[in-house]
Amino acid sequence: MQRRRIIKVKDKSFTVTISERAIKRQIKRIADQINRDYEGKRPVFLAVLNGSFIFAADLLREIDLPCEISFVKLASYEGTNTTGSVREVIGLNVDITGRPVIIVEDIVDTGLTMAHMLDTLKKQNPESIDICTLLLKPSKLQVKLDIRYCCKQIPDDFVVGYGLDYDGFGRNTKDIYTII
Ligand code: 5GP
Image (cartoon, rainbow, N blue to C red; front, side, top):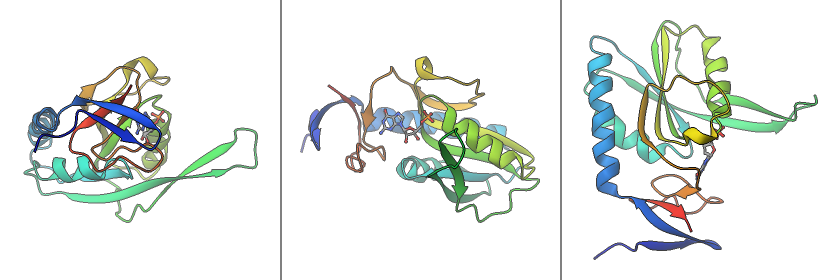
């Protein structure tokens, strides 16, 4: 059966913009790079929940290295100071001290989430940290980030599918869809 090119998630409509085939091809490309770059090493992949769960599952199956994966989450709570929301990395249950770390993220938008994640992880003295993202919106970046692995750069439009949600829904599609 042919998959629908336009879907409705809650009150919004989305059209398919990145096919499952294209996603898989890009994942293979960056997995090959990681396999080469990390030869002889035992990296720890840290997948940022919830959005990266499908990406991480597909990426890991293309990795030939001895490696571990752990799933972390950024919990937001209102801080007592004027900076407002404070975000804390929770669920990190592997010791990353002295280990090469690869952060697996669904999408980098302003980059603030990733910058915060880097700051937090660096305090644990890993050997190195690389960022691996499925999608990147370069026009939205507000901070300087060295993104070593990126499957695809996209324009500044809201996307869902393949793990990414709109208000909790829409994660369960094989393709990626853009809002219309
Ligand atoms: P940043 O801190 O880089 O601005 O935000 C990154 C987070 O915002 C992502 O992990 C994701 O949860 C969310 N996000 C940013 N852009 C999109 C988008 O187009 N679609 C979805 N579903 N989430 C997005």
